[in-house]
Image (cartoon, rainbow, N blue to C red; front, side, top):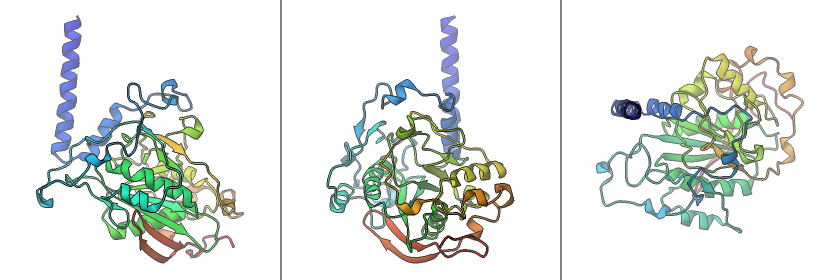
Length: 361
């Protein structure tokens, strides 16, 4: 009986390997990623704590500093055109990370720690050709310390995943109330004008990932990846929560008409996105709770994050406006585009709007 069971498990394992090899050989990398995520899909009920998750690490894997052994990633003595393809699973992944930000950190120190990052926050693996091209869009409104900590932590995190990536910081000016959805839309369009990205991660400035197996790549579904935040005891605060870090392929973005432009100083745009996904007939992907772990920096929000009287409760049902409020109604003025050592800074005036869109004074 035990022999039969062992043989059955062996056959099942071979089938999984063959299926994975088939998907990879036929260039269905996104399908393979989705397939692997399905295999490890979390079965825990939303809101239920996982005792071994709350302890801060995966069983048997110690937490490491995000910069541990990062020097293993370096240029090789091979011409660029002769580099091999990157492996399906990066050899530099270490698992759980300890969030450690040095005191009195300077930009010069951060640049020194990330010598392979090019001007504008662009990076390509120096030792292989990657299949994954990800833009990271960060809505920003004066949280300088948060941005510094995010850049320090996120660059080595992404380099370990062997991605081609760039970080775009969308900086809102002119004293209007913070509008995260509109800044996300601006970041998407500006990033896509620069590169043909196949994946865009929309990333809150105050969230630091705690496990580099949480891959910043897109698959066949939109993905909400910040599913286990320490502030919420490493569980979803509610089933439809989509805040924090959200990933879309460009086709997904267009299908849901981007993000709403009409939520000023309010977090309800996340609930709006959940409705857009449902109304456009798309499913949502989430990583395992072991992987989608984040540390939230102390908020300290600017007073301009307050709710505008033009916001959520006064906008009416989403089903009547989502196809008219988003990517196709975006108005903004790009004031400057600066290639900083670790990111591209997009300074924008988003008080510009399409006719009929409310803008607070």
